[in-house]
Image (tube, rainbow, N blue to C red; front, top):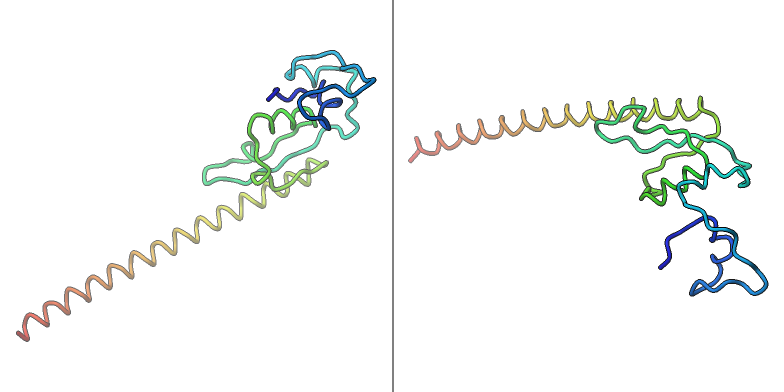
Length: 142
């Protein structure tokens, strides 16, 4: 399969086997990484902010990115999956607020998990202590 290239997609995306539509001439090929540098391309959307799901060790710079449609397309081509995106925002302030909230929620969730794990460890120790006491009493009764 031919590698995606925005310069030829316009004419080929509806057709199979890479055939050119009748009466259409393909536009000049250009390297994909230079697409965003082409001043003839129209981007009516402009720049926007993308917020990704935070991981355990993420900081704000890891989950908040400014890009445009061409950069976003390259991110997708590079392997970005839609399920890792939580939102796309036009205003930086909105994206920043969401990213900050996500990191705070992640920190609270991690703290809660740690507290639950500590409770579990204490309960397990208590059960093991009671098990040992019960075994000792059973041995005394024999």
